[in-house]
Each structure stands twice: as structure tokens, then as C-alpha cells.
Length: 323
Image (cartoon, rainbow, N blue to C red; front, top):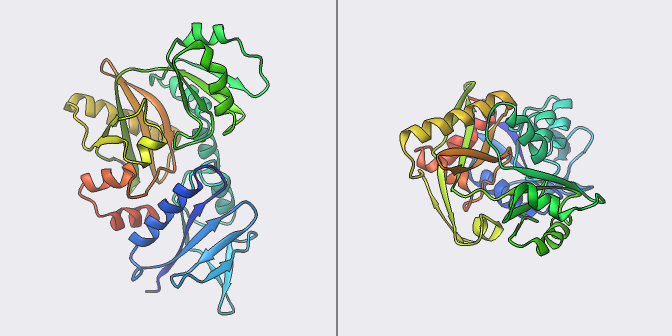
């Protein structure tokens, strides 16, 4: 049987580019070359490059996502989407792949665009009875009434870019006088912001994926950050303690698993996704849904896969095969 040609899309054009390159390379190294003909697709704003196992580079035809090697056109049988941020996590890549009928490991354009937009996603899940933090929306150019914001959500609070990940641009605000500077910082990442109330409780992260049309929830990770919150430094520079499985009772685990499965079904999620929660006085509050979670050695999903007793290669293959 001939090997399937898989393209591992990585890079992109957001602040998360370097992390995405690490995620994509982790997938590339884990997939058995004996079963897959693997190529890395490095995505830049205007130029996409294919790299083979000898580090030789080929320009990718952006019209049909093929490339020429040894005077032959090579087409991908499937694409593993490892692009955090644009154009992988916001649905642009999924749209192109779906138009070309190329199977891929990510959500549809519509669902990716919804989940990448924190404000829209949190409003949607509230309709399903899933608790979230109180929030205030702000867009570039809007008049800012600091007192109105503070009166609604209190202090401390978080100022977050609406469409960004890896905690880029996120600022925790303790005093009213610092809110404007925090907004200025977050606006460097996105013209839309969400300002959220501070939730006090245990922070957890929960990965899940589809296997034979069933939602499989991975062991939960408890996060204890050395910093003020689970920021970039805590996530990628070892400034946090990550305990997998989390120290939770079975009742709470069952409740969280039920919420995650509900999110998967209601949002029509595909591939592997990771949901972040704060458990406040026993009640899980959703922070966000991440549809292209990190897959680097320092990332949470590989830790959870290991805790579940699954080999990483087997896990990545199941995402490609959807079974």
C-alpha cells in the first residue's frame, strides 16, 4: 500500500508563529515515516514553502496547494493543521482546504472563526448554561469609560485581545489607573478586546478529540503558575507547575468531562481541542476554547496524551485518519 502524503502546516502570520513552528515540527518528528510521506508546509503571509525530509525546499502553489518535485506535481492526501493564530486557527486555512476537498485535522471555517473570537464563543456557550466570567467589550476607537468598566467587572481584571492565543497581549490590571495602559498593550495584538473579571479558583486545562465519532476527553491538567496568571512565560518558560491528572474528585471530573463533550457536540469541534476553565467554589467557568492547541514538548496536550497511556505517534495518526 502506498503511503499517504501528509502536509503539516505550521508558522502563519501571528505572534504565535514560532510556537506553531515548534508544534508542527513536533508532529513531523513523531509521525512514522514508514507509514506517511511527510512534508512540512511553512506558511508566511505571501509565500508558502514545502520542506521535505532532506530539508530541500519547494514553493507551494497557493491555487491548488500542490508542489512540483522531480518534475511531478505532488498533492496532499491530508493536512495536519498546526498553525496557531492566522491563518490556521481562524478558519482561513480550513476554508481553502475544504474548497479543494483536502481532508484536514481542524474545524470548519465557520466553527474556527467562532471559537477564535473569544467574545462570540463565550456568548454562545452562555446560551447553553455554561458559566463564564463577567466581561466588557472594547474596540479600537471606542470611547472608554473606566468607571463603567470597573463598576461592571471589578478589580483585578484581565484585558485580553479578542483574537489571539498563548497569552500574547494579556494584561492583569490591579488598579483603575492602569486600565488604559493595559488596553493600549492589548490593542497591539488585536483591534477587538475583551475585559474580564478575575476568577479566583483552580485553573485547569482539558484536551479532547474525536475517535470513531466519539468524543474522548483526555486527563485534566491542573495549572499552578509562578506568575500572576498562566501567561506566556508560565506556559513556555517553565514558570508553572502542571499536574496531570489534576487533583480533583470523581464528581468534579465527571462534570468537567460532560461540559467538554457538550462543547464538542454543540460547537461541532473537530481534531484535538483544549478548553480552559477556572473552578470557582466547585463550579467550572469556561475561559476559552482553543481549536489548534500547542503540541510542543512543553505543551499540555502531549502531557495529557502521555497520562492517558497513548503514544504520541498513535495520537497524531488517529487525528489524521479520524479513527
